[in-house]
Image (cartoon, rainbow, N blue to C red; front, side, top):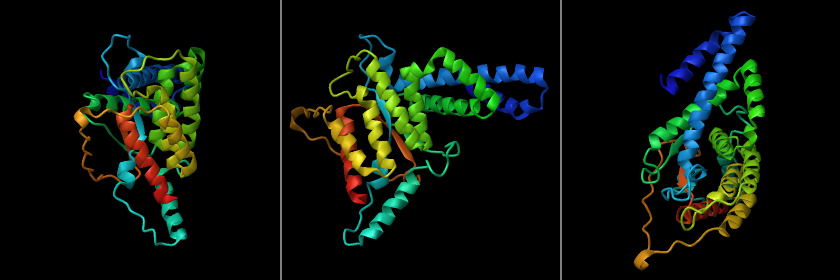
Length: 297
């Protein structure tokens, strides 16, 4: 039986669990919790082990760049120009409209109904379909575990006993899930927790020149502040990040050609992308972020 089948079966069981007597309720509650936990932890681990493999590999492992989940600002602002001759209040209205589109903190506290599209280059992640499916299953499992009070209490009790709040890999997944839901204020709190966990771990070996995996929290903080319309904080985080970026060396003096921009078929502000956590990829992203801040401020 696949993990998707298990999760589907547990969702069906949850529809009727409140109709059972106390003994049957306790029995099926435990079945739902433990089965859904299996799906959750397995798929969350599968997701994180693919986007940041260095957490689980030895020093002689293949050199694969980690990936970080960010708002795709190239789709949001890449084909938009603001007329500088317009009145300032019109600009503010435009900025407010975009902020409303991008952030769901005030609109949907649960974030469950928010469906977003995640893109990733095949060259950066060969098994991208499987990894994104793992992210989806883990996210849906988490939502199911918090859908009923009885499930919530049992799952929370187990997590406390296991001290899951100290698991760095799990915090990476939870942060990405919160960003996916568009809960940027919560994501910022989670990112501060993530930064503290990264600081408590021994410094990891950098996987290749210009790797920024230890600055994952800083990169995502910048994009979260941007999504909330907090452009000053966005610029501050980007400038802090620049201290860790190494200028990529062009081979043979050739300048890397910019890839043609493909207009998104999805609603602006809804796209996310897994970016390589390297200077070569993050520097252009930061420049897009700064330009977007200047356009709407």
